[in-house]
Length: 108
Image 1 (cartoon, one colour):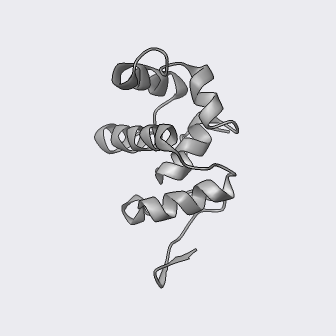
Image 2: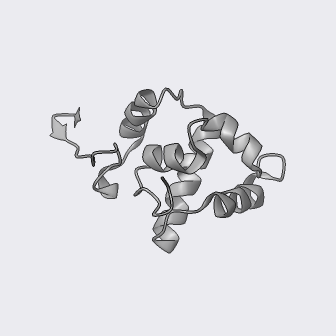
């Protein structure tokens, strides 16, 4: 993918190879490929995923993400039903990809 005349590299599954190249423009392009229209709720989760990864150096599991979402945004959003509505093709798979962090090791 080219962005501002710079080649951005992805692996064969569409995950960003260098997390430091991530920005919102790249996230929007990845989201479009995933048929996701970014909105405030999705951005909240994407930034939460990045923050988690940068702090712990691992991609969160669904359980970890649900807990982190509940802690930050409340119980009504901290559940897998809410998150599946935002990322219908796989909470962790799509959110990680859009957030520019590596594919979780337990993600199929």
